[in-house]
Amino acid sequence: WPARLDQPCSRDMLGRVLRAAPAGLRAAHHAAPVRYLAMGPAVGGHVSDETLDKLGTLSTQALIDGLWVMGWPSSFIEGARPLAKGQKCVGRAVTLNFVPHRPDVQMDKPAGEASPEYEAFEKCGPREVLVMASVGPWESVGGDIKFLRLKQLKVGGLVTDGSVRDTDEILSYGFPVFSFSTTAKQGPAIMQPWECNGLIECGGVVVRPGDAIIGDQDGVVVVPAAVAEKVYELAHGREVVEKIIKAELVANPGPPGKYYPFKPPIK
Image 1 (cartoon, rainbow, N blue to C red):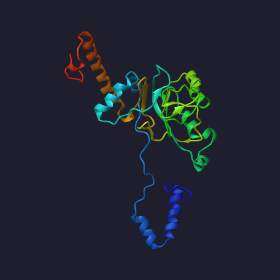
Image 2 (cartoon, rainbow, N blue to C red):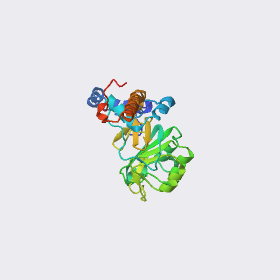
Image 3 (cartoon, one colour):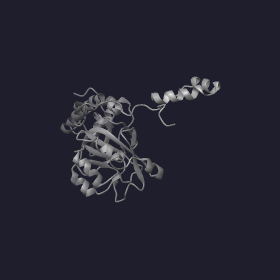
Image 4 (cartoon, rainbow, N blue to C red):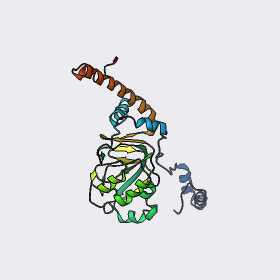
């Protein structure tokens, strides 16, 4: 079919075909409901700069605790570790999905500057974190030449459940990188980038474009945009209580079980 059926020209063409069709076919068409888009929106909400800054003051552990209190599934990206000690990233997700190599898919993928990974790169800046879903933990999502563009754009960070190559050069670029590991292997022989800013699964976690991505020495947490402010309130509250408990245990050494897990009220 040369055009989408939800476009006016396509509906007109469909009408002409049906008018020329047998009565039984026309009746079947009108009786059966048709779904043209069987998916929801990729983006789940917007995280303001203010909320993003507040989330960035918290540890990944506190954010996990906040999500746990709300009954949300774990949002910890398994395997994404900081490439260097002391790295931290805070930003809104720009997503990129890789698929296993297949010749016809490679031929259909836009080439050159129009390729999905470069489309994703151009959406990145200091307030964005590029989240790349690999097909395997040891496969390379990119190296120094590709990621030079992210340095130029001053990206807020890069997160992947795959691996990166040219590690020394990437570290010199200065932006935080969280990956499963490093590798010398090439990626294109194994996988290819397919979609920018769609819903992805990275390290066992669903990531939507615009979700808040927070990474520190313990790993990376995805805070869903739809509940980001609520997560901050709960996580911040728990951090305050934990500081009180720790101060009490420092002042009066003893088993943590006296206060931990939390046994309110704590004075």
